Length: 314
Ligand code: FAD
Image (cartoon, rainbow, N blue to C red; front, top):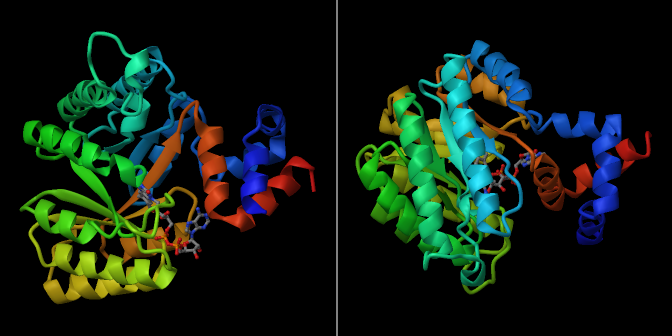
């Protein structure tokens, strides 16, 4: 039922209706900081005024041909320039999804003999360098399981160039404990999330309990390493376990981060800061905001009902 509703919400006619329905826009704005840089900046300033750091995720246009990836590259570069102009770039994180930069482009649509991965690496390098020049840094998002090897290979190249570049791992994947062990070198920023993509049982833990256990095993290893764990979860039990591990390992507040999505458990985000933890809010914005929201619906059936009610004006 949920997948049918999500499919419905992704249709062009529904997309247009939703984008012009004020109540639906209000609902989306709880989770997305608007479409433009002018929408984004006040949100970032508000978070900063509350002691929260931010990670901006640029939601680009769908990538079907190389020109789309080039457009998204420009979106990232404009973002860095704006953060710089506003004086809020130092310490900012950009979350970069390699798909926006062409990683998944098929060979038939590419010219010059480059693969999608090579194009994404070249573009991501530009984003990482621009960010670094502005005092900011990049963490690479992780997409579906078939892209993990390619994403790790690109991250390794970027990290060699700029060691502040972080990577995301998904606890749901069976390989993640090994990947984390290999990556957890001193100072490496490793973001651990549960994972939001469905994957076959052969490569992924399927039940919530198994994913949570895998999350804790990997988290324990990261916390006792010299890497910088970025704990990306809203799950109260996992947050409590993380706090306990931080206490036991005696980690300083600048050697780990809690990371949560914009609009989700905002009081918890502030509580973490108030008691001395480092907390960063992942703030999505950009032209692809609607698709981001629909993906979010796929994860949260309860949000789907809210969304439909808002479109109907109820
Ligand atoms: P859950 O058990 O799913 O949620 C715990 C509680 O949090 C829920 O009971 C609910 O109260 C609240 N909650 C969680 N999500 C929502 C929501 N969408 N709407 C409303 N309430 C919610 N996934 C990837 O696959 N690749 C990535 O690169 C990636 N990057 C991420 C970066 C950050 C900073 C964060 C926070 C998440 C990222 N994710 C990524 C998503 C992640 O994998 C999970 O799908 C998502 O965080 C929900 O899992 P959870 O750990 O919060 O636990």
